[in-house]
Length: 189
Image (cartoon, rainbow, N blue to C red; front, side, top):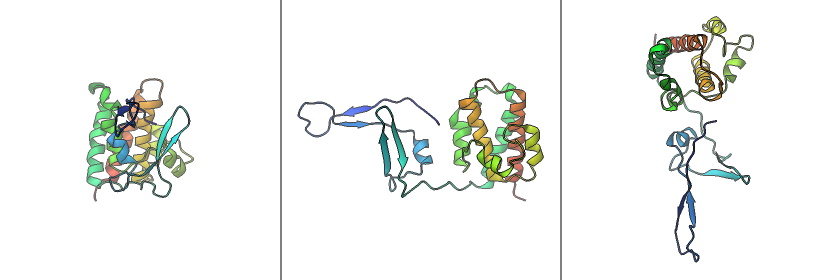
């Protein structure tokens, strides 16, 4: 789950008798609104408040649709660039691997889902291809574009949000293997 700090905007609208703010607003990151599938035409959401936390979600009657995969040329180009970035990680500033605007938003824009590796585990329950580079190599001829892209997105998120330590060389190698295979899968034959 991504989190960001923001401030509530208090405005005076209408004729409030005591002069106190009558409308409160919060700005949301556009990328989040886009991922929820909200548009000016389809903007209804449900708010929930538990006393400490406000949550916003799509209405059950109109859930955001799963995003279609982008053109294979775009996926291939992205995979080739990031495969090289991970391969040459020692020469690349660490912040490039951490910025959501680069890898995270890029993977989402290509149509991949952050599913904590679930699609990879369902497709290959016998192999730990989500964590192990050799297992990933073992299933690479059988994995499909969506499953591999979801795994890359989820594994990137793990290293950006949940991991308690820095990536090791084996972790960078996993991404090199995964992005290389993603580029092959996206190649038009």
